[in-house]
Amino acid sequence: MLEFDISADIQALRSTFADIQAVVDVEALRAEIARLSEEAGAPDLWDDVEKAQKVTSALSHRQAELKRVTEVERRLDDLDVLVELAIEMDDEESAEEARKELKQLEEVIGQLEVQTLLDGEYDDRAAVVTIRSGAGGDDATDFADMLLRMYLRWAERHKYPVKVMDTSYAEGAGIKSATFEVDAPYAYGTLSVEAGTHRLARISPFGSADKRQTSFAAVEVIPVMEEAVEVDVPENDIRVDVFRSSGPGGQSVNTTDSAVRITHIPTGIVVSMQNEKSQIQNRAAAMRVLQTRLMLLQREEEAAKKKELAGTITASWGDQMRSYFLYGQQLVKDLRTGHEVGNPSTVFDGDLDGFIAAGIRWRKRKDDDA
Image (cartoon, rainbow, N blue to C red; front, side):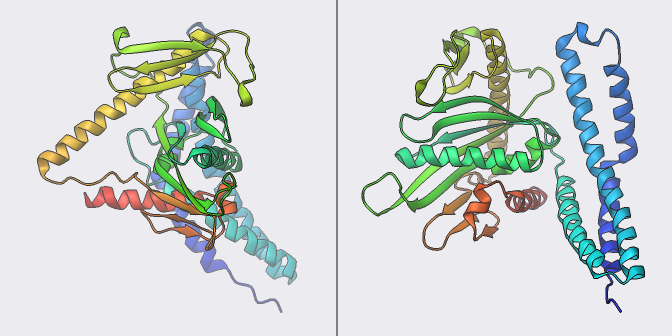
C-alpha cells in the first residue's frame, strides 16, 4: 500500500495563493485587460503611434500578470487530480511526479508571494539595466561581461523579453558597459535590488602571476516610464555625439552614424544608444533614459536632504552589495541579506531568484522599520 499524503502541503500552498490573489485583485486585473483590449481594438489606434505602443505594452504586461496567476491555479487543480490518481492506482510513479510538481509550485508561489511586496511607485514597470566595469583592468571588464550574461540568462529562464540597447566593448576582454531593457511586469521592482557595486575575487586569468585579483562592476536599474518624464533638460545642458554602431573588436555593424551618446554636462551622466536603426530613434531613446535618471537623482537628493534634516544619515544600501568568490571557498554572498550560494557557476548562469527574493524581503523590512 502506497504511503503518500501531501494534502497538508497543498492546503498550505492554496492558503498562500489565496492571499496572493487578494493582493493582485484578479477581478480588477481582468477589468483592466478588458479596458485595454477595447482601446487596442480601436481602428484609429495607430494614428498615434506613441499612444498605441503604450496601450499595447500595458495590455501585454497585464495579460502576462494574469496568465501567471491563472496558470498557478490550474496547476494546483491538476496536482489534486494527480494525487488522487496516485492513491487510487497505488502508483509510486504518479506519486513521485506529484512530489516534483509540488516542489515546483512551492517555488513559483514563493516568487509570486515576493512580488506582492513590490508596491513601490514604479515597481510594476519594465526595467532598464546598465552595467559598468570598475576598478580591476581586464578582470573588471570581463566581470562586467559575466554579469551581463548572468542577467540575460536570468531573463531567459523566466522567458522575459530583453533588448540590448547599447554595448561598449573593452579593448582587451569583456565590456566597458552595457545597457539592456527587460520588458516584463514588475521587472523594475524585481531587479532594482540588484543595483549597487558587485565585487569579484578570483585568480586572474589575465595576469602572469598566480595571485588573487579583486575587481568591481556597478549595476544601475531604472524604470521604463510609460509616459514622458516631466524633467526639463535644456539643450545647453547636454552634449550630443553621434558615431557608428560597432561590435567586438571595433568591427562596424552599421554604415551610418546612427548611434547617439548624450552627456548631461551638469551631472556628468552619460547615456549611449545604438540599438535602433536611425539616429533620431536612438536620440529619443537616450533622452528618455536620461530624463528618468535625472528624475530619480532628484528624488534621491530630496530623500537624502529629508534624512539629514531628521538627523538620520545612513550609508547607501547599494554599495558593495554582493561578492563573488571564484577561488578557494567558491561562494557568492549578498552582504545585505546574508544569502549565499556555494556554486557560483549556477549564479552566473542566471540562477538569481534566491538572491532577488532575499533582497526584496530585506528592503521591505528596512522600509517598514524606517
